[in-house]
Image (cartoon, rainbow, N blue to C red; front, side, top):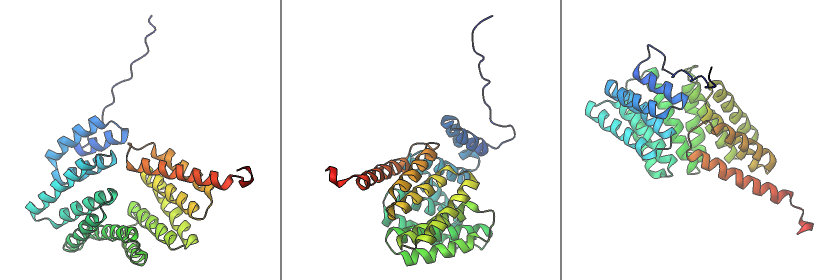
Amino acid sequence: MTNDLPTPAELNAPAGQTTLERAKFWTKLGCTEQARAEFARALLEDEPTARVAFGLFLREHGDWSAAVDQFQRLLNLSRQRNDARWRAIAWNNLAVLHREAGQLQLAMSFQQRSFGAESACDETDETSSGLACDLSNLANDALLTGDYRTALRLLTSALQLDLRDAANLSAQAADWGGLGLVHLMEHRFADSLRCLKKSLRLHRQLEDPRGIGCNLLHIGQFWATLGAWSRAEMQIERAIGVLRELPRGEIHAEAESLLELTRRQRRVRECDPLCN
């Protein structure tokens, strides 16, 4: 008899999955090397679809330049095939990446091109969803430039399109979250909190840690705007706890910076001036 502990059986992807499904399976388990290997195989089998999935994988793992490269390759492929749908998807994702990098003028230009390409496609449910995504992202650009009226109009139109597809909860959650921020910027506080909580419920239903984390951060910002620093700190701490499930990226640094700022404000608020 020995004291050796039993060795766990090697984990395998479920049988019958496509290569891309296996890549997503390993991604969900956090096995990045296995996921990358499967993505490389998937690119040989279904290049456009796999390139989108791989680009999103790279974005989630903080590899910005590699993600940009994947969507630039998709854009080149769409031009070779004269495929407006893939061209719209490429431009949209390039816009998202450049917006996250703070390159707002480039992001706005790319988003307009995405909208133009999507508008050129034949009308289908997929096209309707794509147009709604473009409208939502154009609203983000308007929000970042302080054009709240335009942002509200675009997000309202996007939500109307997304509500036609009851199953498209992810897009609806993004729309509600965007509306919550617009209302917050315009000091419509009751509407803001209602929309942010609606977005949070949908992201929880989807079990989407990134979406949940973003919602909690925005609810923290909501309370900070009202000067309720303890409530703000609690929500931001909850957001950081959820975001630990994700690969380290820009959103973690943003959350930690916001938490530190909120803690400072709370300490100042709690400080007794007579002790100075």
